[in-house]
Image 1: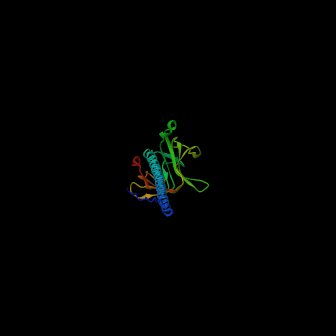
Image 2 (image 1 turned 90 degrees about the horizontal axis):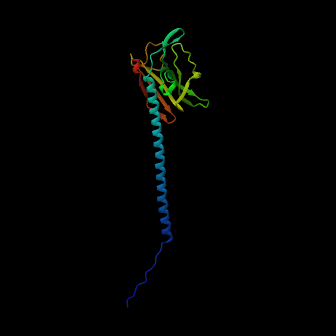
Image 3 (image 1 turned 120 degrees about the horizontal axis):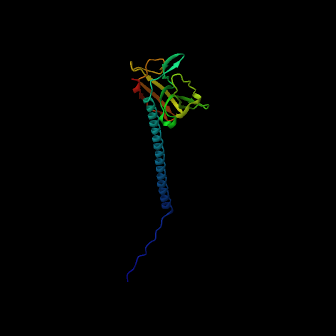
Length: 203
């Protein structure tokens, strides 16, 4: 008669169970940490893409407006001067505004800083319908748009086409327009790449 040796039933000890639980918790923790990193990376990438799109939108809008610059003069103190002037903070010029539909046509644009009571500064553009060289510019009646909020850097530069030199002051009394305009801009997230706009109509 064959004999069967008794099989010893062996379960997990308390130490083994604790080790298994610790390993499982560590793996789950690493997985959740990885998901968190992925989530933060996606959020950061999304914000970066949105910022790049905003940069492109501002650059394209300004480019279209400078491309449409009109070589016009206005009366100032009984003297005709160019309808273009600028300094480090902003500038003024005349260009079409077709984006406004029925309000389209030539407009006088003024762009510069809009300062708030809490210290914030936005980049704002204003537009008045052009009404000839003797028009009265009442900026309280202007259309207004904000191009960029919370501006930290705002510097305009104008290039003399004859000498190639850059300046931050371009008077309306000058006989010509700048060959190029450069904008140095920065917001709460850092500096933008310099935006350079050639003034093809000014040549």
